[in-house]
Image 1 (spheres, rainbow, N blue to C red):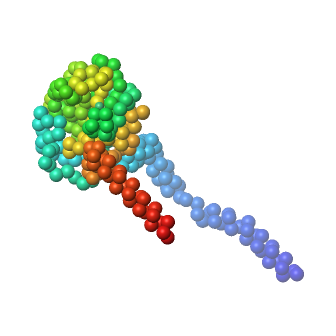
Image 2 (cartoon, rainbow, N blue to C red; image 1 turned 120 degrees about the horizontal axis):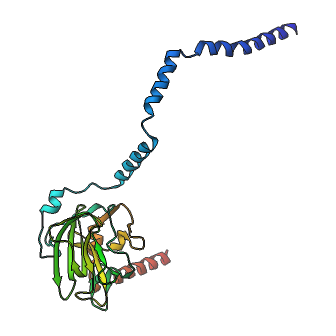
Image 3 (cartoon, rainbow, N blue to C red; image 1 turned 90 degrees about the vertical axis):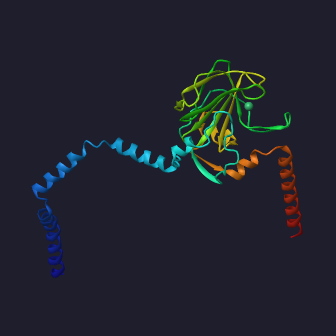
Length: 272
Ligand SMILES: [Zn+2]
């Protein structure tokens, strides 16, 4: 019993002593502490928010595709007479397009979407946005005006801009041009005034988004309600876009064959 008491006393003594010894042993030298405070001091000018901005920029850059070679974008098929200068040119199968720099050309309600119009027996290759004659129309992306032209039976006064991201946009039924062919424009720069020229039944902007001459449904790229791109990057898929550009007869046939496939699949599953 006495032995146990002695052992306990020893442990108690050790418990008091050890922290004191440890403290003494691991106390950092004054010089080291000074170095530490100097290191901390030299970090001060680097503001925390700068680091965060850099990280955010880095992360958003990661989600953006690289811009195509600008000499190729503007050096090839640069004509002033044809809406689609890429006829006969081989089109990439799949391509990520940087649409992050988008600027909404005009704020207004969409009155007609992209797609086949049975009433006219043709494809509507853009989106119609209602406006007042004389409203300012702005460039959707950074780019260069390729053409300004008049088309009595269709677009009326219209502008085509080619963009740094490789796309082209078309603006139709305008009343007045502001930008001139070969003029460099920034996203948001005024390019024309809205109107009711050409084949139009009321003041509106006919707006197209194209890649290699193929019209992409703008509502797949842009959230028209908020006037912003849906995502920073749009994946162009040639097969899907070509299909969306087909006329009624082909579209109907596709629907019918799809229905047939579904019906036969249903029959098969009933058999099982
Ligand atoms: Zn239209």
